[in-house]
Image (cartoon, rainbow, N blue to C red):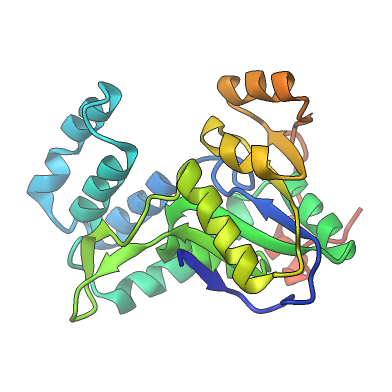
Length: 250
């Protein structure tokens, strides 16, 4: 299963709230932000392959390669061959920085409301488990599903994905598997996302919210009657999400 247990609420939970990460909880897509931080700290792992990334990006724009293939190309060029311990330390630091700088205050407030209502929280992302799991831990999620990176036998990053790229239907399948394993009493869930690739997830939810949506998701939300919510406006809060009480003020 493409998931991780974070502790917290377990089998007794009957209500679950599922949150997308990039553009929903965070102000922007964190994949490139993480790779840029890795490049600043470590340099590109494979310089020749890094030089080819604009070509891969162009091919993706022309639909000659898939999102999963583009993601793997960036992963291989920037991080391929790096030791697991090195990347784990980098990801832990990135997660702490993301909590302070990248998370929307309104997202933290929504998570707080669900926690207060007794709901279990699941973070579901097509981004890499390498940093999504530490972010999920920082944010107090009960479980995380995310795209897995592959490792070699000697604990180096293989530069490829291990299993599905959790975008679209594969994300919904991973969420359903997580719910069945971790929250078997939960017969339905609430879902939040900003992107049209999550329409399968939102359509499967008992309640769906389009958060700061793309134009395509906004159209779908209006057609299906899903509320469109604006989480971009509110400022402040973090201070490490108010010293990890994960909000409260106001």
